[in-house]
Length: 305
Length: 246
Image 1 (tube, rainbow over the protein chains, first blue to last red):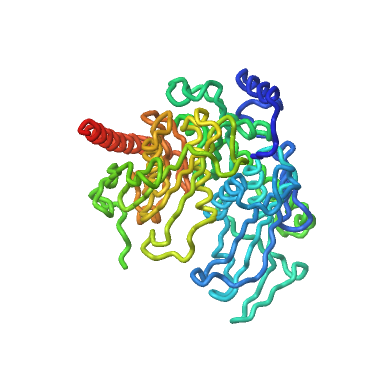
Image 2 (image 1 turned 90 degrees about the vertical axis):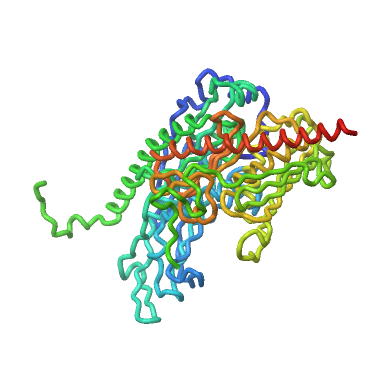
């Protein structure tokens, strides 16, 4: 990802030779995703995601705004993924035209916004004049590879955790009820896209890769920063639990056999299945913690299933 | 307006093609011999693209120089008049265009033998005169032709194509009407192999149908490669016969 970090010749040789012998620096196997640690903050829509040494924080916020003229029935949804030097010295402040920044923000945009993960029609308040504008701010706190995967998980977990204040509409007039007066309402989430990134390495020379029949390229899941610096090609697959491919991006890099790429997609499915379940489980625990007395106050009685 | 019938029960598409048929593919190279070192003009359906390759040449700034290999630059100019309705913006510095440029650079970096042109820069300029769906594939084909015309060493052709998926039927080489109505996959295939240099899926597609779509795409890309090869050989023959007359 980074250009300015130079990796020494001996270290790069060591990492590549280790990969040839089926070893990775952090002891993971090639198809092992790092453990994802998701923590919810005190406020709704405040999420931190940690994958190894990569740390990403996402905050969802909303305000009332005017919808676009050509889409009067839809609310607004913006994802901001600006990488600041906080993540690492290789990133420049305010540089949104850098190659990696553009690819990262475009993939998140396609995965979450264009795929319609958030129900924007549910954000409409008064058609043509008032709607909710939801904003997801992603902050990259520490970089050890896998920014796209981590930020996608953070944005989706944030959107599912977030609750907007309840409103009542009287013609053109609307009343926004503060959170302590009325229970806030969650956003409409239509599906949960999760990204998985594969990195490719070419153990032999270029000619073997293009002309050869051996297909001996190495593919690893969820590369760390050092592996990202050395990789020859990258593939980011976004899937949801409905077995739908939401987005695939292999923008150049090492040419790979089509069947290998298909295999990667299938491998990714088992990973996103696990992460989706993890997010849903954590959300459930979080809501139970918030409503400690719900179980006591409910009139539900034990029933036999 | 009645709803468009993307794929009729008789198996015909909007423009009368069948599911596995390409659009009209015409290309010519060396169209701008004075303006650039290599150039191509190609029409894929209603996509009309001019590609100019300038280089290998000395970089303007010494800081851009790499002592071990050539530097590859791609700039894509999508003209304001390229669509039916004139667009207000010039599309420059749009994220979508920046993404296209980066992907093209990353594709051809691996395919061009940059290491045999150290301390130089190769500029690729693309002008999209008219666009009608599957633009990324056409850009790839245009660059391949222009690079060959410039005589820059490459490992193989890269041919680009887009495939749509309409319900369960894959449709080869989509035009813009089809592209707006369904999800499409764009492929960049290396030569006659099954290796993909580029794979872009931008809308939802069922995981279990993807393999089928890729297979059709690869077959289509091989056909595009043959068409480009044919044109190049014809052009070369013409040049040889002209040279022998003189």
